[in-house]
Image (cartoon, rainbow, N blue to C red; front, side):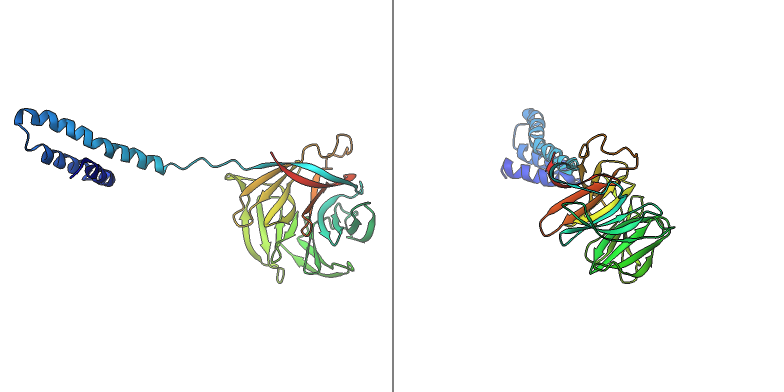
Length: 303
């Protein structure tokens, strides 16, 4: 048997209890024909030489068990493609792109509404008020219907997408913050780190995901948009948008919009980033905020 073959057996046996027995026995076999005076010294030398591959194999095996450190979640900046006028009195809670126009839900009791807005001018084209005591929140458009949340009343409204006629209501547990859809389910945020998927036929919860960034809960998820298989979520009172895997809840990217609105353009502390709309046909992404005087079309850039 060659030394190469012997080394192979030693490597194979490195994980077994008989590894060193095999090495020792084969060493004695190789050395048995030598004179007794040199047998002990040469036996020890042979044992050391033949055990090196086994030790190397053990070291390699342990190294292979180590998992490479998790890559950091990618961060994105932005380029402003266009800046359009936006009603500075609109307390934006939800934003949706539809056929070249924007659908917008505005909040605050006594000022809540559903609107259709011209992108290029900010002109109000259509509006229906949401009467007190309701505080309107997020909206989404699904199969010709607009679904609109309210903040604390656990009731949502359903409208015809073209006439804005109210055609129904739906109910849910807890608060309503943001709303989107993936073509099958309504996707609802409630200010926590949980997102619920509702069946639009009966509004039962199909599943719930917990949103985490490397196991750290990400809460205060606000306005939502479904973009190319991901959920985009404004984080309340920040200039960040989380990109979320809808299957696992893991944050797969962060969008940092710091500085997109110049200082001094808003003074209200609640005039925060809140509003994401996506033009799926042309790949355009729009963002705005509560009481912001501008709507932005942006392009993401990798940091």
